[in-house]
Image 1 (cartoon, rainbow, N blue to C red):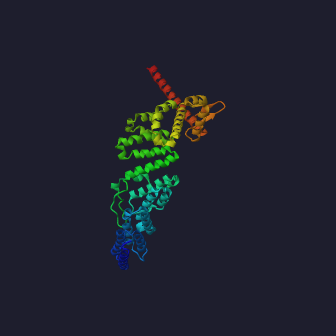
Image 2 (cartoon, rainbow, N blue to C red):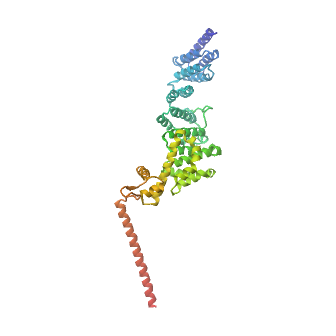
Image 3 (tube, rainbow, N blue to C red):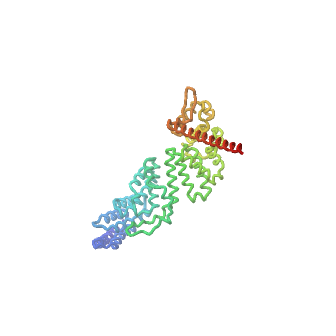
Length: 442
């Protein structure tokens, strides 16, 4: 390279200046000398020399923290101006190595790792990118802005989901409390007290808190999809639906509300599902999609639903939503929908009947006797229902077995009521007798 000797001389002079400043304890002078050396190498396009000088300067005896921080920050500005990818990776790795284990450049190191992981991901090395990101525990960084921390953890979760490491994705997602998205950033800004860590401003490319909320719930939907946890998927869509920017735009909230309705119907019956179902039915926006309002009303109403008529009515809607449900999950979801309708019908029957023959139950459910028995048994095992089947005579009893204490208590209560009635009757008879006697005396 032309002018190489001249560059070496200039660097040597500046190294001597840096040494004098460092030994004298001059922070500003040391920082300037160190950054000037990097500037020289950058302007000369000597990338290898730049890497070498960064390492040399960081390892000098008694090197000042402020000088190392200034060097790392200065060199990070050159990353985007590197001539090729190889040089860029080399510079990032050099900066990563010198900032490792130094708490005063932990934020810079986290940003460097994120950039390196992005390059690895673009090269198709998702597992490597995920491993790199997991090295950094940003939740312990006091000086990092909250939005940047959340964005970093969400990136870690996304890479884990991309490599199908669902266990680690769940562990990382728990580092973020959903309550953090409901805090108003304007109210939260307080004047830092003396001795508090100064929190840095988040970079311009970091999304806002509400955008991060949407990203978080979209990632959680991907995680719950893996487990087919319909109720949790529904809750995630409900949280996205409550974001003001989504609520204001019908083009955004209508598809989300449709998904909420589908997943509510697909979710197994439990108190949380029932509560969400009723709160969704009260939503005024549901009038915009009357088809789905009718579907939810059918599920809430304690009446037997004919599966064939329901499927014929909603089959087209379901097929159009198949892309939402995921190609491989489409058929599974259709089977689960049929299962939910059968469960609903069994619950309805248990409300109206205390005893019913298996044959009649199968007729009401539009199933064979064996299928009806299987579904009923599954519900009893999952404690969704209390029932006993007398198989020899083919009768299902929905009454719960009463405890002997409860039976005695109910008898005692009945006797008490009976004695009260007898006492009142005697009182009325006595009163009538007295009135009649008085009338005779007159």
